[in-house]
Length: 503
Image (cartoon, rainbow, N blue to C red; front, top):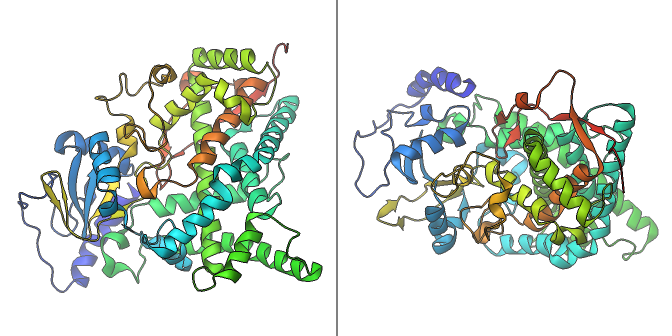
């Protein structure tokens, strides 16, 4: 209700600021996709609510999978079916992927200019994506860092073992976040950013989570640009504070490295991502500078920690709600690797049911419900419709994952559905696109599909899990906090119990 309340409050203010404005026509050109009739000034903003992914999914049931809305001054196209997503993300990918619709919040610290996530596709974008792929997410890079992932999962299990000894609950999301954070920080900076054996890293999780919430929150400035200087909801100001904290940390780490390299007077003592990026800045300073590298790190750390820990938390919640699924997963783990052992990367191909659980979690709980918003540069024809120049494009991956025309018992958590299905999350099957598809597919996908099952499988294989006293399984809530990513509103805190017997 917060956004709706503020919207109504600024309705009259906006009318005063705008000396003249045109009232929306009741009808619409026949070439536009169908959609709800907009009100004057606000358009269809009143229909978003506090959970826009749910609101727009419900509207699509009336107006169809290719739906056109007017959000303030912003034309918006909402895609809510696998067939329409395939058209936008594959067949006409170039027309729909060249630029992004950039939320005002992302202009803080000039992030939108320097980030490969938000900048237009072009030579600089390709250079930054190449840095990401070659140094972090390529198969060779991931294989070379396999020992790091195994080590960080071992530390996660060790932390839970200590909590088990004390009889204390574990905040699954925070524990998963800490594991992901230290994995990335070791890959990039060759050091932990938080203590892996303590309940630490809370401040990192809070600031990263706030970045995702603020970036995805409906913002009046995005719909009424005349309000930009006012920043009426304070979103840009808060985002600037959040970005500043993370960028300051990166600045300190970079300066430490430069001082160390100068003192040692050698260039080959480090071979982590930071060192390679610093060399690239020296080699092609006209294409890549420190601001680009800082934004690249910001994207990697915020997205790589938040989405992974959120998915782990949703998976554990779903499995706790279905003891039969928990039992089946434990049986597979015991048979394949032995009870009480860590799941290593080489084990994943032999754990098909665990893979099914992860896919089913990503289906029901798409990490980024609208993917990252796109923007059409020129007028585009989509099927029989015309999409106007400058239209924002939202692909509702959350709605597609719950589409009853695709998924039997679409709201039920049933990993078994993937035992007989070849659908995967790699961006080729548009019924399941939690990481997007096409040129703008999430570059971190290869890391996520290795790390999530390793953490989940290790937690299931090393402990039995008990809810806090007084809480029943059926009382576990599934409330969501909407942002660019979809977080669990209330943290999952559960007690790891020693296994009854280990063979």
